[in-house]
Amino acid sequence: MGREDMLKNVSIFSELGRRDLERLSKQFVSRSIKAGDVIVKQNDQAAGVFVISSGKVEVVREDGGNAEVLNTLGPGDFFGEMALFEGFPRMATVRAAEDTELLAMTRWEFTSELKTHPEIAVAMLPVLVRRLRDFETHHTH
Image (tube, rainbow, N blue to C red; front, top):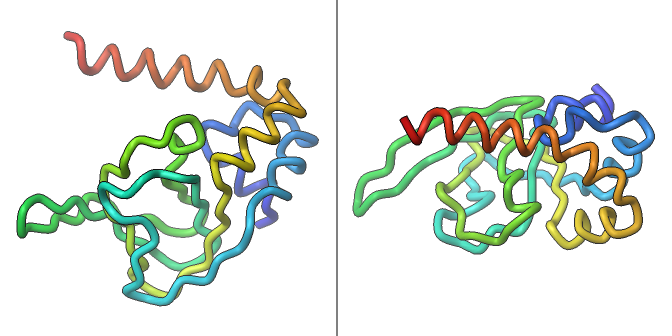
C-alpha cells in the first residue's frame, strides 16, 4: 500500500484529495522500531502522528503500578493524530509488540504545511467537527 493510500485511511485525512495526500505524505518519515521499544510514553509531550506500515503496537495505560493494554494496532492503523493540533501530554504509552515500521510526522511539519496550503485545513474541518459532535453525543447525555 502506498503512503497516500495509508494516509487516506487516517480519519482526519480521509477528506483530502490526492494532491493534498501526496503533499502530506512527503512530510512523513519512516521509522523502524524494535519489538518492546516504547514509541510514545504516557504523560510525555505529544509531538506528532504515527501510521503503522508493518508490525504491531500495543496501547497501554499505566495507572500506579498497573498497566492495562487498551488496544493492539497493526498495519494501516494510526495513533497520536490529535498531537497535530495540540501538545497535551500523551494519554497512554505505545510500544512495539513486534518489529514495526512507522510513518511519523511532527506537529511542526504539519503546521508548516497548513500555512502554505490552507486548503488542507479546510478539507479536514468536517472530519474534526464530526469527531466533536460524536464526542458530545456520547458524553453529554
